[in-house]
Structures are given as structure tokens and as C-alpha cells.
Amino acid sequence: MTPFEPLLQGQTAIVTGASSGIGAAAARALAAQGATVSVNYRNSRDQAQAIVDAIRADGGHAQVVQADVSDESDVERMFASHVSSFGRLDILVANAGMQQDASITDMTLAQWQAVLDVNLTGQFLCVREAVRCFQRQKASPSSRARGKIVCMGSVHEQIPWSGHVNYAASKGGTMQLMKTVAQEVAAKGIRVNGIAPGAIQTDINESVWSTPDGLKALLELIPYGRIGQPDDVANAAVWLASDQADYVTGTTLFVDGGMCLYPAFRDHG
Image 1: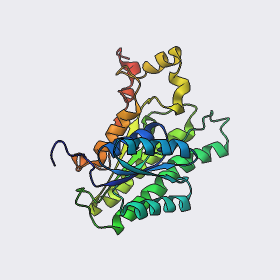
Image 2: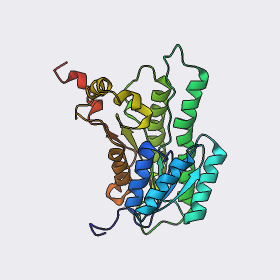
Image 3: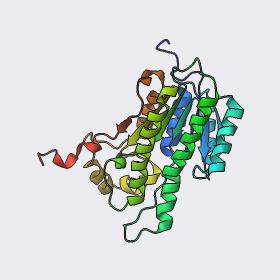
Image 4: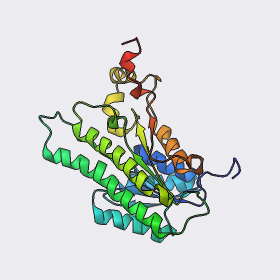
């Protein structure tokens, strides 16, 4: 491979939850490195189509595909549509996620279940279907691995988060799902890794960073001194999916500006 050849040339990818935020950035970044991408959305078709249009305008290849990742039949249909369109699957970025926040005493079972259904069951269903696809198809000359999976976690797989017990539990579960599947399928030539973003400037947390006081308080938690951008996470996903990371499996890459470094202890505790 020459230094100028796209890292993912000749490969195809599904990115879930790709109509906005980190997922949209990941879809565009993978396409910019040569991958043909299925841009998944649940409700926001126009937003997903805008991402596909942007990829095509930049000379890439993509399609939209609707699916609710918490629905088994939807997930099976999404993967079948991708393989029907592009012949094979090489990369899954399992990114779709949601929040429904409340204190433990106020959180309803419906809030708990909704977040676990999307953030954890959705990861399971998509990872399972990706592994099935990888095992059915011949190895690709474009990749040393038979298939690559990137599970989108969070710093809250490690950092407890008061008022967000459903979200934190789902991300802790995602971490163990990723590691366990990585252990199971490594001998088959399939790599499975995670990314744990910290504070990223997306719509899901706009209420935190959109005011000067909120941003100032947030930055106190980030030793590197800036809020992350979706491209920070997208670039990590590209690397994990590429042959540059071929000896990396079963690990979480924290993309958090140092948020997990216990910044309250910077002044010796």
C-alpha cells in the first residue's frame, strides 16, 4: 500500500445511527478513505440522505438504509440490503445510541428499557449479524482481517454518571460485549474493538456546551482543554477499521481529551 492510497479502498461498511453526530462523521470519514457506506437511520431519512449526498459529492459511494437497531428483523433486513447492494460487508461501526435521563428514583422502567434496547441490544444484534456476514463470505484482498467491527462505547463505561444509570449501564455492557465477542472470533480473522468518546460536540449534549457557563464547567472535566468534535471519533474509527490496526482487537480506544484521567486530582488531590 502506498502512503497515498485510501486506507479502506475496495471495502464496504455499515454505520448505524449515521444521520447525525458521530455516526454521520464516521460515515463520511470511511467513505473518504475509499469505503462504500450504508448510512443507517431510524427516523431521520432526510438527514441520512444529506449525508449520502455529501459523500457522493465528494466522489464517494453510499446508500441510505432504514432500520431500528433494537428490532431483530430490521437489523437482518439492513444487513441483507447492504450485501445485496454491494456484494459483501467488511466493516461495521455500531454507533446508534440514545439517552433518556433521570435520577434513579424517578427513572421509569420504560426509560431504562428504551436505552438498553438501543444501546446494548442494538449492539448485540448488529455485531451478531456482522459476524454472520463475515463468516459467510470469502476473505477480501483489500483487508488483512476477514471483518472489522467498531462498537461505540463511552467514557461512561468506566466513569459512573449520576442521573444516567441506564446509559452508563448500557455502555458498560457494550464494553464487555465487545471484549467477549473479540475473544470468541479472533481466531476466525475478525477484529472487534471499541471507541469510548468523552464530551463530543453533538446535538445530543447541546444543552451542556451551548452556553458559556455550561462550556466552562464542561472544560473543567477535560484536561486537554477543548471539547471533542465528531471527526475526532470518526478518525479513530477509520484507523481501527484499517490494516494499520491489524494487530489490535478486543481493546477500547478512549477519545476523551483526558477525561478519564481524574482531572479533579490535577492539583495533587
